[in-house]
Image 1 (cartoon, rainbow, N blue to C red):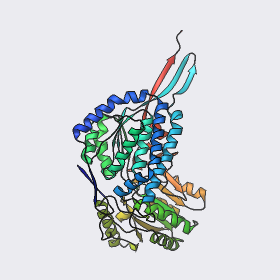
Image 2 (cartoon, one colour):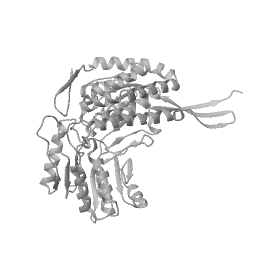
Image 3 (cartoon, rainbow, N blue to C red):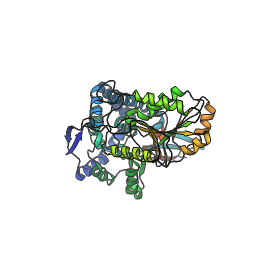
Amino acid sequence: MLEIHNPATGEPIAEVPQATPEIVAERARAARRAQPAWFAIGLDARLQVLQRFRAALAAELEPLAATLTQEVGKPIRQSRNEISGLLGRIDFFLAQAAATLAPQQVFDEGGTREVIGLDPLGVVANISAWNYPYFVGGNVFVPALLAGNAVLYKPSEFATLTGLHIARLLHQAGVPPDVFSPLVGGGAVGAALLAQDVDGVFFTGSHATGVKIAQAVGPRFIKLQLELGGKDPTYVCEDADVQAAAESLADGAMYNAGQSCCSVERIYVHERIHDAFVAAFVDTVRGFKLGDPTREDTYIGAITRAPQLDVLEAQVADAEAKGATLRLGGARLAKPGNWFEPTVFTEVDHTMALMREESFGPIIGIQKVGGDAEALMLMNDTRYGLTAGVYTRDEARAKAILARVNAGSVYWNCCDRVSPRLPWSGHGDSGVGLTLSTYGIQTFTRPRAWHLRQPG
């Protein structure tokens, strides 16, 4: 049995049966048998099914949000925001699927036509994440199902109840159980899933686990997408609106207790405004309420995974030992559950783990820089490449800097933002492949080249 605990209290919530290797294998075989019929019902029918799923999410938003808050420690308002945000993403996929998946005629001359068709991959493994289970999972299973695939879905063991709700609502909406099959458990279940006959693996999680998955499935030459971590930098120029930038970046660093792949994790501030920015930033963070995630006024909730507290403590100790100045926070709370104070450091540099290794918590380092060239060098001094931002009044200046940053998504005067209309991807250790946008629908297909010649 998988024991589920509330990270805000440490108390047990539920026990759920885990999938055995035999169950995983049987569900993989069942998915293989069921997928052709799911594709054969046609896109219009699949669109109707996913529309019913969307309606069910909206109808059950409050209890679903309560479950999410209970098992991951996310403040209730942020849980509602996530589910509401998924509704918008589903709307995008529903609106774009027909045109994106339609055959494309590229040549017609002398009785010969050339057409590009898009077939489903077949059976895909979706190993999802706990920090945004609706967003991260929905980025995969919604377009995968629309394209006609069967999905073997392993929710994170830290968001199991949410994953089972997703499966329940999809089945109620009309997705056959063998076409969307939840597999409950931890790493052993994930390993069993990777051993199955699947046509694609879509994983969101840590770089270390991503490496293991790539090594496991690489020799099989199947579709592999890895959405991994980030050490997302932002540069605040001397002409920026200091108060607006500080408020925006404080939210970008601390929202969801910093447990987001695209959370702001490094801030570089021009020396002319450094002190004013730090004062405004610290004042903003000090105003964020940490506490019971079920309360409407809570902004920072619990840390979902207890081992991450050790990571945060180690980064704090390393930064202090190397001369950083602690401006706020810096410690776990002595209370039941997994709690860490919102933490702000200045006088940091790249010898510190805080500025190089993913934090995934409510902690940030702010470094003073002399100008654009130094900021750009530091922003690119990382093995990650997920997002990056610049705050300035000068759009041309921002674009010139951001064009040279190694990142899949870049921001001018904003941060920590994801749009269904834009592809979500990364460079380096942030992963391979993409989700979202029309490209994120096509990624669940394989092209077929049609050469069609009229007789005679």
